[in-house]
Length: 116
Image (cartoon, rainbow, N blue to C red):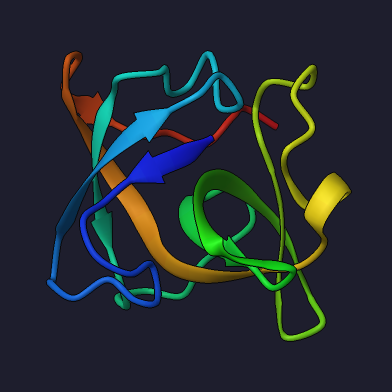
């Protein structure tokens, strides 16, 4: 799932950055057209967090995925929709730029971890 953001995807510049979600890879957690708030920094990323990341093999592609495990100084990330494979299975390790903390449009709410 890619995100729409003005400017280069190299880093998130504000304490909270709004991004728009496109594509089906995080469905049902996030859907095409959702808008989320992303926090760079803060507490460390943990497995299960929804994050904004950049794949090392596709540095121009900013994505929203779920962090699975730390790997090679970055993170292995996957989408919640198992039928869509535009994640680490296709592109390898990603560098996390920030953690998604809330969805504010169209269904406001916190982004929760999946049950274990």
